Length: 121
Image (cartoon, rainbow, N blue to C red; front, side):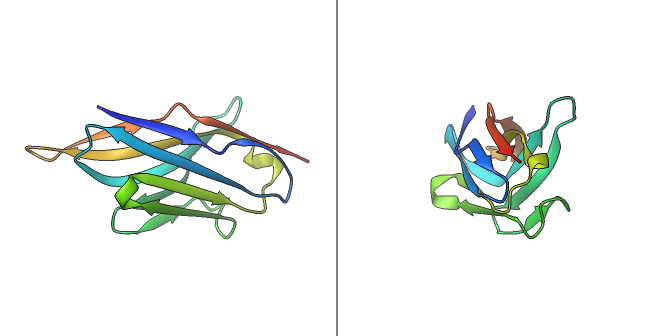
């Protein structure tokens, strides 16, 4: 089992910045990718950004140029630097990871509990 713990959420004014962190722990063999998703009230969960262990990144169009995802492989930790925050960024932000387990390389998806980000206008 792999556990994910997020931190760094909070209340910020529009135009401000926050940095989210997520660390994976437990029976970790190989982390293939990590990512951030978010869910606003009454809306479906949506992709924010993902990063592979090789450093390839992908962003939602709505956050390109404002958010930056990075990963510290040695610590199984992913970060999301959020700049230029807008009220529409308000949501619960969830971290996930794709874990590859021995002996056959089976892939499993794990989710964190989420951290609230609120942007006041």
